[in-house]
Length: 248
Ligand SMILES: [Zn+2]
Ligand SMILES: [Zn+2]
Image 1 (cartoon, rainbow, N blue to C red):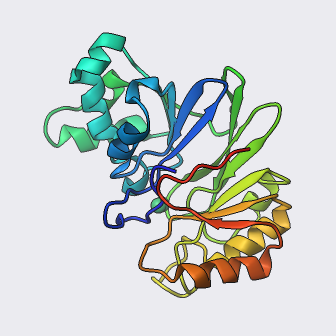
Image 2 (image 1 turned 180 degrees about the vertical axis):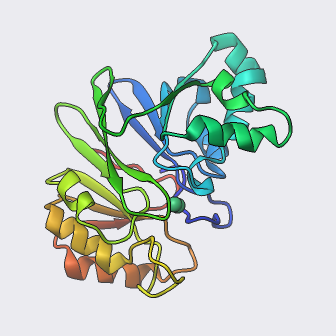
């Protein structure tokens, strides 16, 4: 767990960023603001073989910019010639060009990473790991992501409002990580997020074995959030914190 903050990071924290490791392979799921520094504290960034982006909100991809600079100019990247595969949603190339084009570096991201805009219907294979996507309702086009090997599965709901899609996609997953951004359902106007109680409810309906709540501000009442989720879901509920490790 490199970062679990919502769109503004906690003091000393980072927005969405999750490192998935299996069989010696290292996959970074989302790369929001603050994540690159957390990644460097946990691993050499040149060890990451692939980065997967759930959707094109800043808190899920902004640190691709410093990451791309490190791949382009750092001693470590020059020594290892690291060029991770970057799986990003359809339209990502144009978004990255617009952002870094603001300072005339249009191709920074696509030159530093091997950029692929994924088709959400495709399944990716990274050695023993398989990665699947499923669209979930949010403010922009957004994909839940499931990573599995022969022994276990991990499902990340990305950002989403209450929906049936994630329930079907996460069926009987070993670990379901859902956002619990809102303290109250009517907080913040139009719905794009879940409350802890809704996250628990979705985990129960999916038959998930464990639930991790993420994308929560440190300003929220953590004990209350856990209690709300536990009321809906009988399995273990954990609150994400930066640096947490979950073994499957
Ligand atoms: Zn979002
Ligand atoms: Zn977000």
